[in-house]
Length: 411
Image (cartoon, rainbow, N blue to C red):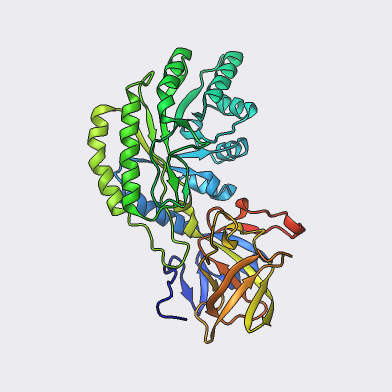
């Protein structure tokens, strides 16, 4: 391998003993034996705990931390997260049920998404969660539901900001977007919320996700807070919450490094006094998904064949893109890049090689690693895909071609 070839960031969140990866204090081979079959996802609660502890230590204490459960809605994981964070963000009625089942208080749950159905809005309003209004039509539906049931909906306005989060992996705001209400249209909507007598809570301003540049996140947070303060002049009541999203990324691809939290935390400490002066009682929320759980998860598949074709090695596994669409490159990548992948029971190995890791599906898109340097693997060895705690199982076409679905376990 060329010395100048970019490397993945060290995946040192898991211990390695006797050349075998350990997760939850257990050797991967023993975990696989206990589960009884592959493929599987495994999430290490101790790593989630450590990530959240380190994040809270870095950020100002008065900031609330919410978890966007679309990143990983596994019930056992949600039950654990409910003890660690201050609230959940949901994006469907199914996620609403999962959030409530975890024990999280409805008053600390917010519901985002541009296409909420009437039935979903009714369920959310009845439960008492905060509806992040994404359009004038959605506002009118909320009003109609409230009138029918004599309810008092809790609402915030999701703002499509007049800026973008630079260098984000996925832009969620700025310019023409399906998400939120254009900033210029928000004052008129706020007036209508006041006239309707809804319980106005505040603003949700989210510009983008998966950003590894602290300076870009700092700029976006500054702009979001400035926009929230400008819009607060039109608020129909006290601004109780400002959710500035997150956008915090984790390193997936060669050459990427972990996000430096220090500039972000320092900037928030600088901003808070001015925010408190203008809006004394406001709760400032940072909402994160993948940053909290992404690095705590692995996807594990078993090598079922080893073959050579035109000088290249192909490791054929019993798992692939139907279980882990993102690792295959088919979940938003323009040019496919490798996730960090190792042979879990031969982490370093006595022999190294360049190999391709391929799934069992009848499509050339079913690739977990392309021409990647790793320990030499044999049939029965365990392929591990790191950074798999977020947007893995539930973001994948698990029914494609009728293969068995993977197991999920929290350890």
